[in-house]
Every structure is written in structure tokens, then in C-alpha cells.
Length: 377
Image 1: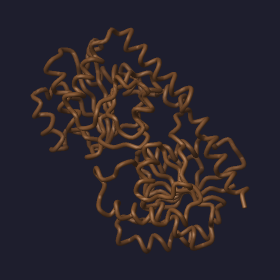
Image 2 (image 1 turned 90 degrees about the vertical axis):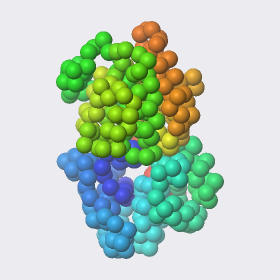
Image 3 (image 1 turned 30 degrees about the horizontal axis):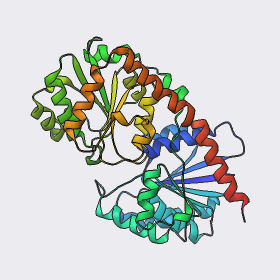
């Protein structure tokens, strides 16, 4: 069977990484072929997929004004490819991909929803597109896959067809997460962070929905109260050249406690070099990076967003979103635990991922979904 994936772009993000992992998980199966169509360009991940032999098409839609041209390119491409299943990822691709697939008679359409409450950080255009998708959800897709149950609930509330929806969470490739080409000790050594220091890591691009403001305020409070604790921020635009970010850090009076690494391709090594992971978003669907931190055995503190609390399954380490004082309290409490207790929390987190959220399990669920669509009347 041939599955054509339509996605807005292929830079590093939760949906993009999940798509890449899904394709890689089927690489040894001769009965399934994946084609990827980016509405914009190949981004960071497109080249990697191309190197693995995945057919890739880029449509150059860098603005809404280019939407009609991209639609007709997509329509022409889908007519030529004639995939057995069209799988679209996120709102823009759901709308354009759904309309294009339907217009050329491709009925096995799967929409994929990754977000929860886009009113926090979502543009007016995105909100409008979601509204259009809700209106079309009863007609275009045969199945709507949500990455989180919280996401399913929100989208049913805004008008998505409930009879079309099912939840398939993200899956994690443990072999790749636990193996790293970067020396874990070298990360601390390169940054000049003592191995006696406790290191809290945050991973995620600089964006309002990630709420770095709350994390930095909380971290500043903890750093002012405790000696020997450092905070490492990993992700796009988390660099000293970002004036907004630097203003937040300088305002804490604890700038020496922060290390800005920017976007990296060794996130797993950064996680494994740390003592505690913190997710501080104001909205999430199914947070990939929390699962990755759990998979490598890190004890975690998270805000109560999307399916984060469900994934972590440790309510005592969950705090309300946008609450720097509460987050500071929990981080301080975590750092105060004996090493053995933090290690036990990390071991429990890794076991939860291993038993419920491996890529093998999730890969099979998508394969079965595609097969059921093709085989059904």
C-alpha cells in the first residue's frame, strides 16, 4: 500500500518528528510505501528522509497568498501518485490535503490533530482554519486521529465529528533515544558545569505556548534559594542573540545559572546529561519531549497541559500552567530529594514508556488503521 503524508513543513517539531519515526518504523516492511508532501520546503528533516529513500515533494507555500497555487499543485500530485491512503498532519494540511484528496476521488483520508487549545498562541488564521476543518470534518476524513485524549475532547467541543475520532498517542524509539553519538559527560564539560551541580533541562523552541517566561521566573527563584543548581535551555531561538529571552533571564538576577544551547541534534544526550526535566508549556497535545525525557530515565516536573499528566502518571509532580511560584516549589522539592529517590522516579518513568508508548506499539496501530481503511467498503 502507498501512504501519502501531507504536512505544513519538516522543521523539528512534535508532529514532524512523529511522522519521521512512523516512516522509519515501517522501513523493513515491503508492503507499505510512504511518500511525504511538504506544503513549504524540506526543512531540517526532509533531507534526512530523502537520504533514507523516502520520496519527498515540496510545494513552496510560504504564505497564505500562495495557498491556492499550492492546492492545485497538491491536487495534481495526488492525482499522479494515486495513494491508497492520504494522511494529513495538522490544520493547514488537513484543510488543503483533505480538499485536494477529495477533489481527485481519494476517499481514504486520515486527518491528524496534534494540538489542544490553540487559543493560547494560535493565530487568527489558524483559528479560522480549525473552524473550517470542524465544519468539514463530517464529510472529508474517514478517520481523525488525535495524539492526545485532551485534544480529542477539545476538538469535539469545537465541532469536530465525534464519530470519526480516535486517539493514537506518540510512540518512542527507545533504541535511538538511549544510544547517542555525543558523550554525555562532554556536554557538561563543554559548558563548564560541574558534575556536582544539579542540572535542570528544558527542551522546546522559543514560542509563547512554551511559556519560557514562567520557567525562567521559577528557575530564578530556585537559583536564588539553592547553590549548585543550573538550568539548561535547548531549542530553536534559545540563544544569547534573542533579546526577549535575555531580558527575562537578566530580570532574575541569576543569569549565571542559565545555559542557552539553541537548537541541537543531540537532544537525547542533553537529556541524559541532566538530573531533572521540566515541561512548562501553557498548551500541549501529547508532549513528545516529556515522553523522551521519561524514556531516558529522567525524573520530571510538568505543567498540567494536554495529556502531560496522563503521560507522567505522577500527579504530585504536576503543577498548573503559568504558575511560576508553584513550578519553583516543585522544582525545589525535586532537587531536594535524595539521589536514590530521584533515580527511582526516573526508573518508573522509563518503565511507563517502555510498557505503553514504544514506537513498535504505535507503528502497528497506524499500520492496522491504514489496512482497515483499504479493506473496508
